[in-house]
Each structure stands twice: as structure tokens, then as C-alpha cells.
Image 1 (tube, rainbow, N blue to C red):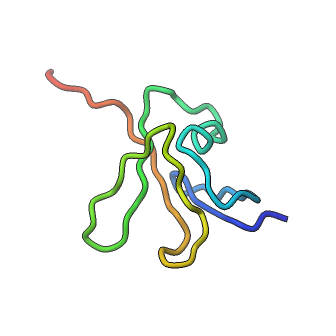
Image 2 (cartoon, rainbow, N blue to C red):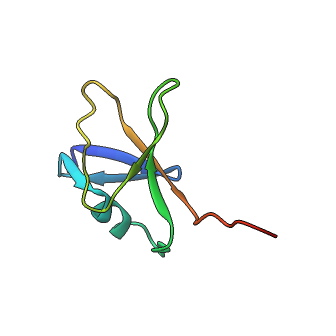
Length: 79
């Protein structure tokens, strides 16, 4: 039974690992577009954090609650 939970784009994911890298989180997303970026929501007015592929994120909810992430398509500039 998974001990840790997190959400990406509103979908719940479970894992036995207490931390995952950005690449591991993306790898678990069905049909993930590699051009998209992964962001972690931060509480309150703190800006959300861009998660790099090599960055390890603690999923232990102590101190910050359940982690929530979202994906962002690449920015399009111009007309």
C-alpha cells in the first residue's frame, strides 16, 4: 500500500517513495508532452516553483501538506 500521495493537474498519484524527482513525476503521467514544464504549488502568496527533472521533491506531508503539481505548455509569443 502506498504511503505517500500527490496530485498532478488534479489527478491523484500514490507512491511508496518519500521523494521523487521531477523526471520521475513526469514519467508517471500518461501521455505527458515532454515540451511541458512541471510546477509545484506553494502555499499562500509564495510563487509556485518550477521543478527541474533532477530536483528531488519530498512527498512527506509533514510541514507542507500533500504536494500539488501542474503542467504548463511552452509559452507562445507573437501572433
